[in-house]
Every structure is written in C-alpha cells, then in structure tokens.
Length: 208
Image 1 (cartoon, helix red, strand yellow):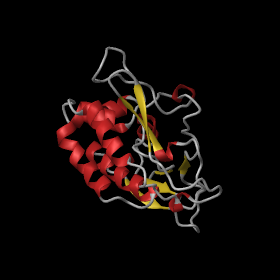
Image 2 (cartoon, helix red, strand yellow):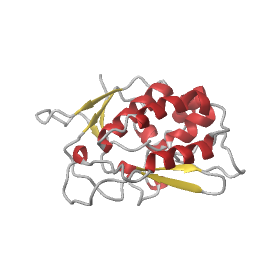
Image 3 (tube, helix red, strand yellow):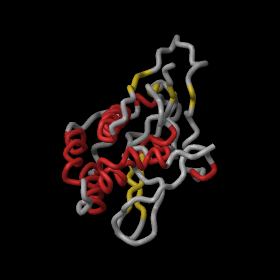
Image 4 (tube, one colour):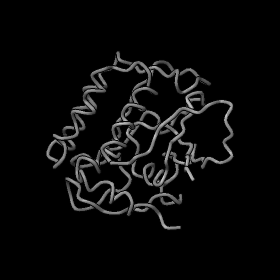
C-alpha cells in the first residue's frame, strides 16, 4: 500500500525532517497554507568553524495571513552570496562538497521569485542525492486526507527534536571540533558523508 505523508516545505530541511519521511512513497505539500513566522520555511542550520550558524532567506514585507506560495524572496538583500560563502566556509573542505555544490548553485543562480519554488527545487535535489525514491506533489483541494500521515506543524524550531518521535542522533563525520552537533541541515550530512548519507539517515529514525 502506498504511504503518503503530508509535510511542510522547509529550506534545506534538517535531519529530523528526513527521518520523519523515511519509508514514504510520496510527500504531499500544501502551498495554500498560511505562512508561519519562526518556522523552518525560510531557515536552516549549518556547522561553522566555531558555532552552529543559521541561514535565513529574507522575504518581502511582513504581511500577515498570506499563503506560503505567495511569499516572495527579497533580492534587495545580498543573501545568496552570503549563503553560498557561508556554505563554502563551512563545507569547502568536506569530502563531497565539490561534487554536490554545483547542483545547489544552479538553483541559486536562477533567482527563483518565490520561497516556495526555491524550497521545492532544493528538496528535489536533496532527495535525488540521498537516493530516496519518494515523489513530491501538491495537494488536490478535493482529495481525502484521512489515509495520509500528517506531520505538518510538528517540526518547529521552538521545540527540541528530542521531544518528538522522529529523529535520534546517529553521529557521523563532521568538520570542526570533536563534539557532534545533531539535527543540522541535510547539507551537513551530504557534504560530509556523501553516498553513506542514506544509511546514516535510516539509523537516525527514532525507535518507538
């Protein structure tokens, strides 16, 4: 039987997101949902030389009650270069950086107008690099959601991952320092572990 999961669309999702969707045949997204501030929709965390840093995509205006698909990226700010420089600083010496970064650079260079489209393209690439054969689609407003596992609103920065039932830290090679930082952006795992990323993710699924 096909397993479908209703999920939020994040910017370079963290490992908890991928642990939560493990085993899914398809992911269903909801572009008409209202944008929530203080979410992962426009932010992700990477490991820098002396700290965990947050990358945030600036958006135009602060209009309340607007659907996610209508959120426009603010290109008046030099955020693309900042993000690329930060990613290079964090992972330029990682084993798989030079193999994977061109995929993401290509999307950045296209300057997608909407944050929804940016996140969609980046997630599509991440799933491909991880070797996860899961399809992505947008929800049909008339469809019955009773047979779909719904994790929307579950993964929020305000609540530690340890309080949820999706992800448990499975240490892997990281640059900088000896202490392992769990649940970072999927970029951290891909750049550091490459082809081994999928098996590490499977070990990160929390045992219920």
